[in-house]
Amino acid sequence: SIASADMDLNQLEAFLTAQTKKQGGITSDQAAVIAKFWKNHRIKIHKSLINQSRWDNVLKNMNWRVDLKSQSRHIDQINTPVAIVEMELGKNGQ
Image (cartoon, rainbow, N blue to C red):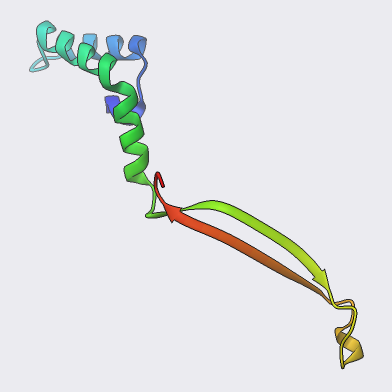
């Protein structure tokens, strides 16, 4: 729950204090180790969780335009808008 909540140091301290007071909880030494680990690795853990929660492909770029036909064999097709969309997909982090 520390990682999923992306706790800042104040939230972590309150959480760990509550865990040490709970019956069958953690010791203050364990709380100190967890706090030190979280302080040193919080950003890496957060980025890793974000990367794991994404799908394989991400949208890297998108271009679009609307074209109007100005000539056609059939009169009813003239001035009919046509949307053209180009999407570039890529793998996470690439």
